[in-house]
Length: 442
Image 1 (spheres, one colour):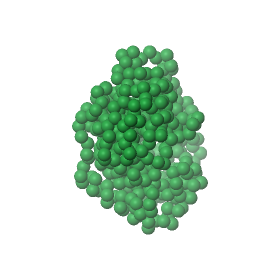
Image 2: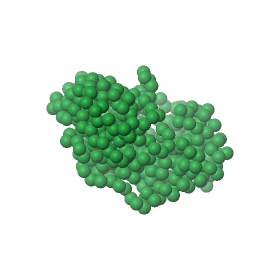
Image 3: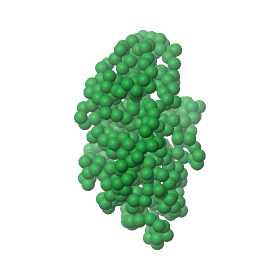
Image 4: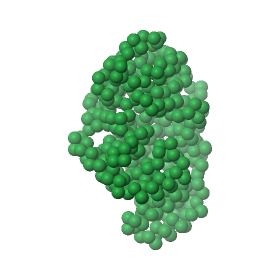
């Protein structure tokens, strides 16, 4: 990370790692085009000129710069005060206080920490997401890739969701880009092959006995004869330009991956951070287009995540480390219904840190497997401190500030139980690490 204190708040973020070519993702300001620099805000309050440059670089990436500028291959240490100033600009004051407490409890000099924290108290929060970098050519861009009409394989694993799958297929029938096939890997208990005969689509159906999500997706990848794979969930709805906007994004940015955005309510606004093009720091296999060449180079999905979580996150991280460009695409959106019945989520609820049972591992063991494998044990532990207290409250309250604070308080009351949950998860992730990744080649 450009600013070291981000390791407390984002210890397992894609961009905290150097890629396999030993470069970071952060552009060197002097190498950016002038019209990009003009859209950034230089902050003269930093003590170090290097901190000012790093802040501009971080801004550029967060605001949506996607280009070929040179990136930093090494990161300098910065004054403590500059780190606190940076955090205050971009994070809620409670998270800044969290970092202060964490550092003091980590035996940092309390006088220096408190002094730096206090001196930056009047720092103004940035509203950078309100002024993203514009890609004005997008609206009238004539995509050569679309004119070539490449075949796309829409990959859908499904389990006991024929009611919702009917709507999925009806939406696919309405696509204005027609050069695609649908590869379904059906694991339903009552497999209904005749169901698929009712739609005007090129559908390939495989009945898979084992209920295994990543096996299903890997199977579909192997079956596909297309150069582009578009992964989709069986409980989602899309507009008629969904496939076209994914392909157009790859062509416009010369990208390898187009990560669509998700909303959970009809008519809901796309979240601010996903409302503009930017280099994506995640990958969601419910709505993502990936060049098949990516799989040929880095392998298929890791089956260590079977029946657990973050298998798509691990693949996205692996692609990032190999230097593939993954663009967050606001124009390829879906409505994710997140229905309770059916589906392949066997552990946890709607994220990796909440559990169905009190003595189930927290977080899901595959999460710690991912964190420990790529970021190391120290960063994994920081991630636990950052996420576990917040996970006590139900998923629907994850953005409610009052309930978050209540969750932190409750987590302290339940410390013995939570501790046992974490220990169990750590032990199970150790078994996964010992086994190693289960990644097959294509």
